[in-house]
Image (cartoon, rainbow, N blue to C red; front, side, top):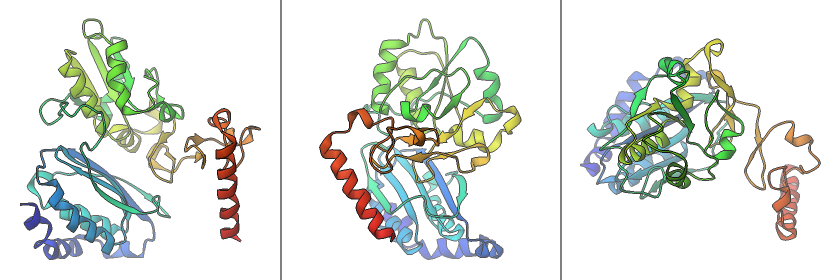
Length: 321
């Protein structure tokens, strides 16, 4: 199925998209950033890599697409027509026909290169037996999310990593203080109890981590597990600022660093030494040296790494002259 869908029908995809693309949009230089995922059985996932990579390269697409037996996960950037072509190609597979991306716009590429990779998991929990295709929590729309997390009987958990939570989260949410998603199962084992925590609401950037987290918790006996459909990005896109319970900015895994309501670009930069998001206030710290250190990595900076970062910064300065 994979070779037929992603090979012979490529011309058909292009014809369909050319008919659908608004010609007036070609004069708009803004790039489209599309984030998408779907948990679905794809035993032939490896067959899709070649054609998908070729089309992305042809259209000047940058970003990352992960393919696994459990589904697909990607964030890509490119022209309106290029992104539409890629999505149309994916949707030719009946199993991906309802793929719905979350889109935003930027004036420059938020990614340096293109990657189409084959993986064991499309989001790494480290527990392949956890399968959202078999069991998943209850989806809650952005419009209904405020009412749910305002219920005092509901435990609200941010399933993202600690550095993501640092720059923004929902009011009253619990931070598991994990460094990677792989640590989430240990957090559940050590801090949560299905006999005490009757209602749990989970959220993450785009929704994908919550699908696995909710599947994990249901498998461990938690009865009512809810998660934000479309994640924080969909909430920021659809819920008016005046009604929002979101505080701060939302970290994203590209060169925009963070977004705010309406998916507008945020105010954060990132440390070139450790990758941690940094604010304008962080840059005023005596521990901040551009490209070398920031308040989050200064104390762990070895002389050897400092020397390497100084040389990288020197080379960068030469290129910019």
